[in-house]
Image 1 (cartoon, chains in turn green, purple):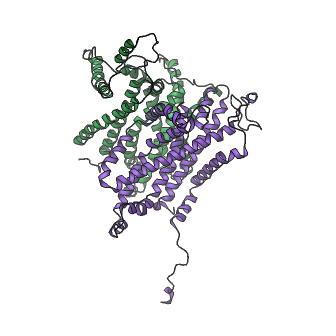
Image 2 (tube, each protein chain N blue to C red):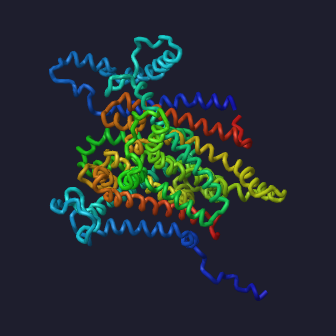
Image 3 (tube, rainbow over the protein chains, first blue to last red):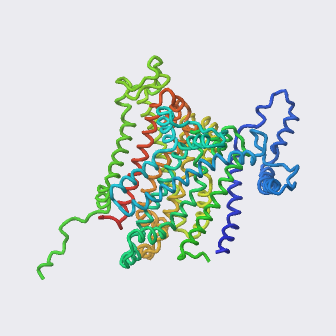
Amino acid sequence: MLTYTIRRLVLSIPTLLFISLIIFLLLELAPGDPMAQVPLTVPPEVKQQMREALGLGEPTPIRFGKWMWQFFVVEPMVLVDATFGSDWAAEKQRVISWQTRSPVMEIVIQRMPQTLWVVAMSYVVGVLIALPIGIYSAYRQYSVFDQLGTFVTMVGYSVPPFFSGVLIIVIFSVQLGWLPSIYDTTHQVVDWDSFVIQLKQMVMPVMVLALQTTAQISRFMRASMLDNLNQDYVWTARAKGLSESVVVMIHVLRNSMIPVITVIALGVPQIFGGAIITEQIFKVNGLGQLLITSIQANDLPMVQTVTFMLAVLIVMFNIVADLLYGILDPRIRYD
Amino acid sequence: MTEIGNPQPRTPPRSQWRDVWDQFKHHRGALAGGVLFLLIIAVVYLGPFIWTIDPTFIDIRARNQGPNLTHPFGTDQLGRDTFSRMMAGGQTSIAVGLTAMLLAVGLGGLIGVLAGFFRRLDGALMRLTDLFLSLPLLPLLLVMVMLFRETLSATFGPESGMFLLIVVAIGITSWMPTARIVRGDVLALKEREFILAARSIGTTNFGMITRHILPNILSPIMVSATLGIANAIITESALSFLGLGFPPDFPTWGRLLNDATVYLQDYPERVFWPGLAISLTVLSVNYLGDGLRDALDPRIRGR
């Protein structure tokens, strides 16, 4: 298992390097110049120096190398400095955003809490709703509840977040006026009342994202339960005289959870990328909103760094899912 | 001995597609989905011949109307008829969905067959598939549209350039699941006896693929195709919704939804029609795919 983990981690390095190269080359084609806003009275030599200060004006391979050095060496150093108070990264060039002229990672860290609160919360809520639905649908296959569950799942698949989000804004904010339609990120939770406000503004984005998660996970849960419910060991357990709840909730559920847990692990990075639209609708200034505004503003270092971090998440959670599968299912051995 | 004197079967043999249709008929959701999808296509493409109001006709005196007899879905802020705009938007959205699906399934099928059939290509092509699966797709799609929008609009004109760009972008970011499924099926098929028999009578690789492999992997391809339409329509709408899709005066369902959200406070009912159209289309296609998957799976046929 350990050798397998190490092999997968080592193999992921060239994949990630290649992905970062693809993203870099794609962004290299981008039109637009970060100096376009600088007044015409600024002499060309000064403009050239400003360009170089932003890491521009050099050949592509050198800039790619510099970005890699900054991302993989300087940024971790900064992290170490911030944790232990050392000064390794002092005076070293970090990845700088063209929009704000400040280090990209600082902005990412500022935006992280909002995304984690809303997106991670909705993922947890979605999974918690999905599991019972999937279990019961499979146990009573083709019953009214199962048909209804399948329909809700289909609706969750089919209604895109930019419609469901807008629809619940119309219902709960415009018509009923119960919930705020805009997520206020400056809001701080200090006492019970402010906690209620925080809860209120989180309800709608969490609902929208959780609907999609629920749709996917409950479908997997149902299919996986159905695979296991007709196995011989279930009949054996029933024949032994175990109660129905023990058979379903312990014997079948534990075996059915194996593929579902890997699917849950695979979905984690997707949720970060997929939150772009939901964050845009509810004006949550999280990572997704950061990405779309920097794409629109042509802020290439920001786009490059955030997209690459998403790619790292995807690759890492792929490995996590495979490892979980091996740990949970003793029939699968990687060595 | 006379009882078995007539070994001829009385009834003509049932074709595979007849069985598939019989199974498909029993899936009520799928049948309803199929009918609804055909209905939406019919309304969107044939409707403009009956409902002849030009979607770009500006009648400023009739602006911001609610549903009434002259404008069944109301009008927008410039007095354009929402119903005819919905039909025009639907034409683009469904055309994008179908073409992007064809591209994705064609690419996925080709890569899947090549990887499954030729062992030498398998490693490289599957690494490529894994690589594409690890890319964050929505951000890259946004970046691609942002980068090539100007160039393609200049070359092919704003509408067809954008159409081409969106179709290609969706196509090359959604072929991977099809390729994986097809490869798995081809690998399983290659071990079967009829392939060995065909090989032993000297069938060429090309003949093998077109005559023996492709007809047998048609069912996973068809299922991926239906799900691909749904995926492409949603992606196109998402791009239009984020303002990175077709130009503003060129309606698609996502664009109409995006335009309507600006007037959410005053005319909240306006977001309803395009959103409902997208959702119903995708829902019907998803049910269709679900039914097809069941109908094409011989193991559960007859249940």
